Amino acid sequence: MIEKSVKQLSAMLAAKEISAVEMASEYLARAKAMQDLNAFITLDEDKTLAEAKAADALLANGQAGVLTGVPIAQKDIFCQQGWKTSCGSKMLDNFVAPYDANVIELCRKAGLVSLGRTNMDEFAMGSSNENSFYGAVKNPWDKLAVPGGSSGGSAAAVAARLAPIATATDTGGSIRQPAAFCGVTGIKPTYGIVSRFGMIAFASSLDQGGPIGKSAEDCALLLNVMAGFDERDSTSLEHAKEDYSRDLNAPLAGLRIGLPKEYFAEGLASDVAAAVDAAISEYKKLGASVVEVSLPNTKLSIPAYYVIAPAEASSNLSRFDGVRYGHRAAEYSGLADMYEKSRAEGFGAEVKRRILTGTYVLSHGYYDAYYLQAQKIRRIIANDFQAAFEHCDLIAGPVAPTAAWNLGEKNADPTAMYLEDIYTLAVNLAGLPGMSLPAGFAANGRPVGLQLIGNYFSEAKMLNAAHQLQQVTDWHTRAPSL
Image 1 (cartoon, rainbow, N blue to C red):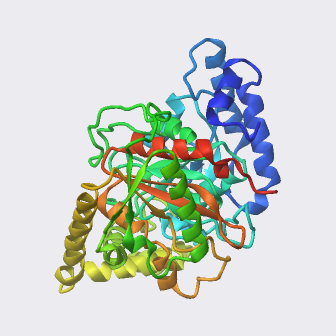
Image 2 (cartoon, helix red, strand yellow):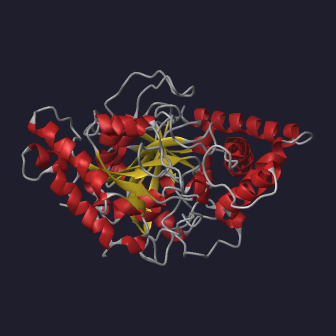
Image 3 (cartoon, one colour):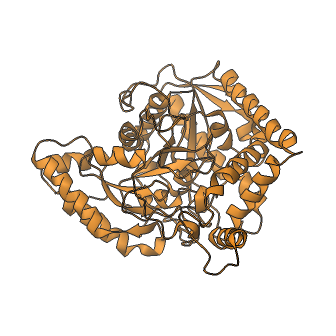
């Protein structure tokens, strides 16, 4: 069962071959047996089975939807009523959400069954999932390797077959990079397609929810649930509801794929480049044409992102002060001392680093020199993509310069960690959709991902291209030996 696609699981439930309770129980048992991966922060069998029983009632009454009864892992960044919602932080270790995020509401409405809350970098800040208060997630393909971040728990859970699909978020690559490192598929939609209501904020102009699954088809089915306008989110787009699976089987003849020369320059590991080249060759066989394009300001995405994102994080995280909810220091001498001790104890090192950076770039005398300039660069980067899309329909390239590195390998050098995001950050700065799909393995046996980038609202086109590649390759069907 664990190797079945979402569509196959749905068909099994509809045919009464298995009940939602039985399906959820099997995944829960597997998740409990593999707790050494540390993919989940919270499992609650009673809550999960209660949802599964409700799904079985819908199935019995003929009221089920496409995904009713299908188990799902929820990233611990989405508020979920009655569940601890920690965002991977000591600051929220005692916070039980009193309401559902929009994404959770939509999953409930669709009849999906929540298996548990997946581990993540604290407040989604990180590229390795080593910044979690609950400890690092291990990569199922090699437990010595990082799974990628910040959605490493969701990616690891799907890769290890602890869940068929999972929710995730992407601020600078946090869906695509862990999907690549764990050999699964993930898509970050156009900014504003998925509501951020109830999604604990890191950088509001960059954060975007999306799905992780074994295949493009699985992701399309979950994105159908997650996407939609929400008046409670001021950045939610009033975009017509789509069926993202509608074009999965369309032929690729005539598709123009752009290869940015900046993505294949110095710094890209040869084994990653070979895997990406092999995937591009398959696209040519499928009838797509390849053109060289240029994204000349790619290198500027790192400094721009690491000014804008910390600035927004500094503002968003100011609410965690020990007064209303979250961690409060046990001993303090006054209000100011309580603020200082609560925040010092509640936040981890990387979050503190970004708060300090963000506060600095927003301070008087530095706002114009750093933050304003970074926003101007952001517009230039977005313009680069629009110029490239005049010559192609999709852009393809690597997700990261290397395959997954070892746990602890880059912890002493934050800059080296930040440089791993060189190919993903610009997509968030421009608000474009991007995705990762399995494209083979590096020399060390760890997975490599192929990145596809589309123009605004071209999710269906990207998923079509990904699905067609997955019809002629088997990378997405391979699972780690656990």
